[in-house]
Structures are given as C-alpha cells and as structure tokens.
Length: 165
Length: 199
Ligand SMILES: [Zn+2]
Ligand SMILES: [Zn+2]
Image (cartoon, each protein chain N blue to C red):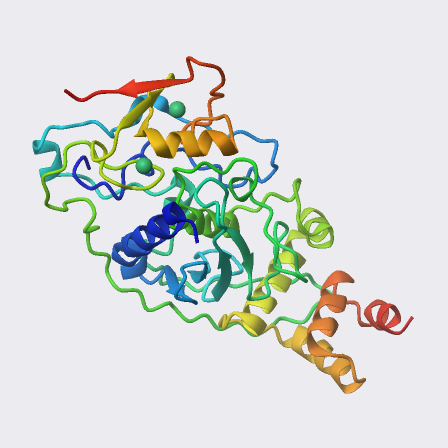
C-alpha cells in the first residue's frame, strides 16, 4: 500500500456514507487508519487489494453470481409478469495491480495532486494529514477544512511545514 | 483546465483503468474530450436489486477547481430510484455536494453511486414521487424500477403488463418517456395517468 501512491488514503481512511444522501449528514472518518506513511516493505508483499466501501462490497456484482432465479410476486390484482433473468457474464476478478505495484516510493502521494510526497515542499495539518504545501494552500482558499478528514482548519495553527530531513 | 485538475484526472483515469472493478466489468470510465473536463462513467446495476442486469451511463463533468470541488455527475440512463430524478438524472448524494473531500476520487464516487442503487435513502429523496412509492408500496416500486431497467438500461426483465399500458398511451400519441413517467407516477393506473396527461 505504501508504494502505490495511487491508492493511499482512499481505501482505508474513509468510511463511505452509502445512503445518507442528506447533505447534512456526516461522513465518518477514521483518522487512525491512515496508512500514508507506512514504510515497511514487507507490508507490500501481501498487501490486500484496496478495500471497497463496505456497502459496495456487500452488494457488488463482483461476488459470485447466484444461480437462483428470483421470482417477483406481484400483488394479487396484477397479472403475473413473465420474468426472465439472465446472469451477467462476470469475469473472475484478478487482484488489483495497485496493491503490489513495484517502486521505490516511500510516502505515497499527496491526496490532492497525487504527486509523490516529498517531491514538493510539504505541509502537515493539525489533524496530521500531509499534503504538498502548495496544494494545501490552494485548497484552503476554497474551503477551510482538511481535504481528507474535513476537520475545520482555521487560524495560524491549522497547518505547518513538514521537513523530512 | 487548471493544472492540478487535469493532472489528477489523468492519474485517476489510469487508476480506474487498472482497478478490479473495471476488470470485473462493474464500472467503466471513458474520456469524452481531450481536455479531461468531460468523462462518461458506466456502472452495472448491483445484483439482488431491480437494477440488476442493467447498465447505467453517467455524465461526469470535471470543474476547473477539481479536486477542490466535486465532479458534477448525473445519470444519462433513465432510472427509477428515490435519490435520482426520474426526469433529469440528477443525483442526491452527499459526497457530490457538501461532503465532498479532495481525497475522494472518480473511482470511489462511482462505487458510492453504485452502492446507492443497492441502498436507497427514501427519506432524503431527489425525486419525491419515486420516494413516495418506495415508502408506500415497495413491491410496486421494485416492479417499476425493474421495468425502467428493462426499458432504458438493457435489463433482462420485461414487465408485460407495464409494457402494454405504455403501448396504450403510445397509441394515443403520447411520447414514450412521458407515458412511462405518468404511468409510474400514478401507480400504473391507466385511467389516472391518461387523465393527468390530457388535462
Ligand atoms: Zn500535492
Ligand atoms: Zn485531516
């Protein structure tokens, strides 16, 4: 996971709100599982494929197609409709190439521009999320919230430069 | 297009193309123009839902300010779902609005929309008529959604009685989409739908 800057954060730091469409509802964020910074190479050997949002997994057509035919029973006043169900032709799912991408990167990517972290000057928010300094500053012009966990970022202590050496 | 936006979308496009969902045929993403501002998404209707077997196209417009602002996404394929407008395809999903975060991606958004098809939220509807039917007569809702999936998304299940009623209205000179919306709205009561259309 650490080496593939393409998948950082998106798979583990978010819980996806599947049906709380109301724009007043909350995304639940787990700050503790952000794995942007895991460096151990051995993690990569058996890296799991990026986990999907749980509801997506539960209902995803990726699982084995069922052989059963569902009969929809209309209410008594309606005639029985003729139902024919065709199973989708699903290919078996190969492990995600993202999970085991070879490379030398250590810190993954900036969640905003996806550049490798460390390539540009870095900033860390007070909630501990790391971005390119310029990406974070651009973002804060639009919204004063962490682009990953949406925690409010206001005032001078909202973020600070981060030096790797 | 802003530098970050184009760069991000290019990288995301690659990510989606390599994803297991694309390999498994449950989502697709296509580029519509060279400036990376417009894409077309495709999601498979989830199993064990009225959308199963259907393929739903999504219009994706990437704003200049992406990823600081969410992509604008709507269904191009007509769909009968409480959280999608049966007329415009507009989607009510919080992450496409104020719960957007720059760390979200086209892939995660497509998966969230797909998950929305599995788990509707009728109490926060985009389409009040659909949501009402969902709450009051889930069986009829399921049949109606299945019929729409068949009519518009290539779904396998034709509902005979519904097709016949649509045909009756077509024979009266009503336009097909209009006929289907009216019948669906009035719980497939031909008389009320006709009355509505001709009043
Ligand atoms: Zn960046
Ligand atoms: Zn944060």
